[in-house]
Image (cartoon, rainbow, N blue to C red; front, side, top):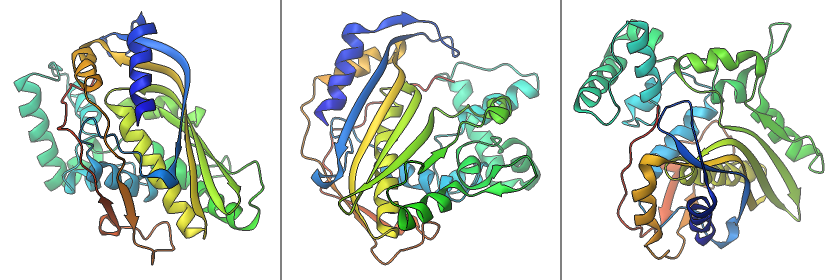
Length: 305
C-alpha cells in the first residue's frame, strides 16, 4: 500500500487549495491512478485500521439494490447516516450543527434510533434516493422497465469475456438532482471489467475522492467486488485499477494525514471468501474473513457533509 501513501504525499506536496460543497476546503490534484495486483494480497491499508465489517456490509447493501440506510443501521454500520440526517434537519427547518459537535452526535444518535424502530420514519428519512445500489441493479429505462447491470455484467463476463462493454455505471444524469437531496451523486461512478488469461480485472473511475477517509474504503470495496465477481464467474482475480478525477484532502484532515505518513506500511493481509457461494446476491457477512491483518490503530477525522 506504499502507492496509497505516495498519493497522500503527492497531494500534500502538489495540492492546490480549492473551495468545495461542504465549506471545509480542500487541497486538490486532478487525474491520478493506482493499480493493485490482487494476487499479491488484499489491499487493505495497514497504516491505520480499516473498518472492514462496514465495507463488506456496504457492498452487500449495494448488491441488494437498496437505497435505504436501514440495513446498514440495523447492522451497526453508520457510514451513510450523516447525509440523510442533514437532509432531515433541513427539511424540518432545524439548525444543522457542526458535525464534530456534541449536539450533532446526540442528534444523529436519536435519528438512527428512529431509523431502527419507526417504519414510517425510516421510509421517509432513511431513503437516499436512486443511489449506487439502485442504479447497479435497477437502472430505469424510458419505457418503465429496469436493467440489472450487475447481472448483465456477469452474464457478459461468462459468455462474451472479450467484450469491451462490460461496464456498470451509477452516473444516471436524469437522477443526479434526486440523489443529491438526501445523499450524494455517485463519487465512484463507473467501473469496467476486463478478462484475460483466466483472470478478471476491474477499473473504476472516481470523480471525487476524499483521499484520507474515503479512498482506503473504496480500494478495499472494489477489490472485494472484483474478487466476488471473479469467483461467481469461475475466474481468478487480476488487478484493481483505481482512476481518480478531483483527488483531495480536506483541510481539517491534514494533521491526521501527517500522522499516517509517519507510519511504515506492513505486509498485506489476505481475504478468504466462502468458495461455495456462486450467486452474487447470496453473499453474507459470514462469507468473508480477512486474515493476517495487523494494522496500526485507527486515525479519526470528521467527515465533511
